[in-house]
Length: 470
Ligand code: HEC
Image 1 (cartoon, rainbow, N blue to C red):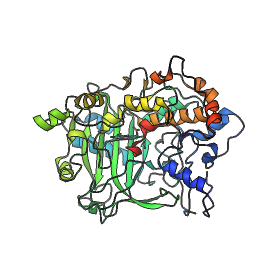
Image 2 (cartoon, rainbow, N blue to C red; image 1 turned 180 degrees about the vertical axis):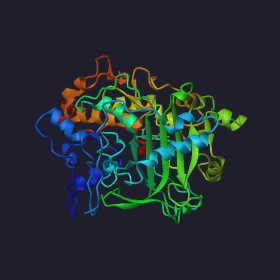
Image 3 (cartoon, rainbow, N blue to C red; image 1 turned 135 degrees about the horizontal axis):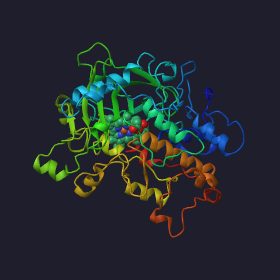
Image 4 (cartoon, rainbow, N blue to C red; image 1 turned 30 degrees about the horizontal axis):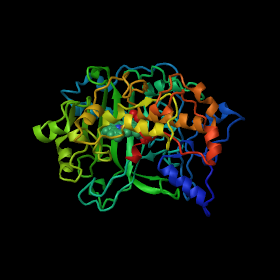
């Protein structure tokens, strides 16, 4: 895992592979692409699956010799952690949304800024990462590709498009739930998955945007991250911090709250963390806020709080709103979506959905990453208020608003399908989804035969859960 690739002369193939990795496609690439992971302890499926599971990053690294590398932390607690004294529980989010979201941020940074988010150094609290992102995590901070920011999306002076990468963390209550899925890394159990009250995640989003293009980034936290196509590092700046929490006080809505902060050099405060300004908090999707409602009748989100000062900054730009029709989203996010709605799509198909297959096309139709405005039916469907145990697509296993759980499980299933197709039926405890394109016979992914006939493996799955590709 600590191997550094010979910086000399990357072959055409490895260049191609790293480009594919940047696009997040590597979930089930040829086995040589997994070389950064430790070798399996023995032959066969179980040892290979275990080695993949424990792998921090399967990407290459060039030119950062001596720099500290990302280490994935997956030691999930086996007993339910205490959920008393969670600071947000005493705050009414509808009446005091700003106090609520600030409590979420304070909780998330308290344990972690002292160790600069190297959570493995933290001996007191029990934070963890989500597993099975190693093919997408860059080597220095474990960040994965996010949607890029177009010219003028972040600021009117933004002349160049920017690349954005991010890393997320779960609190002990969230980690406990991840542990239930991944207790046996060779066979994830997703049936009836749900997070307990108090499960919480925080995500740091960094950008390559310069302070000349985006002046409010001046003085922000900088990290060096191995995000370049040649696997060298670039300097990135903290732009956005996302928080999400399962709170039973929101059970009459969706049971989750999602909110986000933007770093603002001009905000009061001495530290980077004090200069994070809340953008908004949402606890429902406002399903009736269609394009017609918004454009013609002045509709605004009701199941949310938006910080007017921040909204105003973006209203003048081409993107107009952060989320669709004024819903909550971060500056990095796609304006044709919103936090809670995109996350309500988290599910397990119970099987691999591989790129380039008709099943993948169908999956994209059933589970669109974002929604086109002006199609009121599509907007209404995308912004349904789902409960944690209701899937976005009937007949699938919902994964309780966690796209890291969904993406990790999808990466695992794609890897199994490509490398150990015989194990696919033995590694799901939920019924595999039937796509129309499966035809009359039940799905039996005979990929070994497919590979043999095509010569090369098809690129892997997970397209529905990759934010970087919108
Ligand atoms: C269009 C889809 C989309 C939108 C909009 C979106 N996210 Fe996410 N988010 C993702 C994906 C995909 C992941 C998992 C992959 C990753 O972490 O890189 C993710 C991961 C996360 C995580 C890590 C834990 C988890 O649930 O997976 C948090 C926290 C999070 N997002 C919060 C937010 C917040 C807050 C917003 C709004 C400001 C938001 N997201 C908007 C797609 C989206």
